[in-house]
Length: 133
Image 1 (cartoon, rainbow, N blue to C red):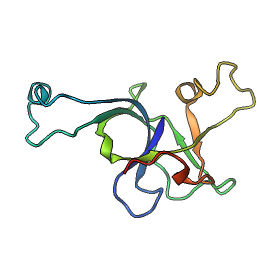
Image 2: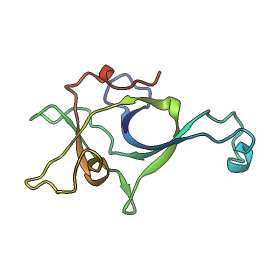
Image 3: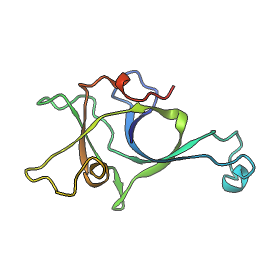
């Protein structure tokens, strides 16, 4: 699943980040201090391991009015984080950036992991997708 992560800015696209949620998990309160000894506050109830896409630009591409995002890489590995689930706004629709020849192994189950660059579809209603409120 791809999701939009809030950084609490007013512009709908600017200030939000796109990430692929890989797993949602919970650290039991009985072991939080063993896992996170420097944590002084209560830990979030649920956490998500996410892999980041590049930040959204302030304006979409003038040709098709879609925002282009790519996998964010660090040292040739996907950039990833663990975030509180309550920071996830909603799921979004990503369209793969197709080349003249589409790899045969791409299908609806594999394309999110195998394609590097996507377009954020602004033409669909984000309320059509799962919202985390």
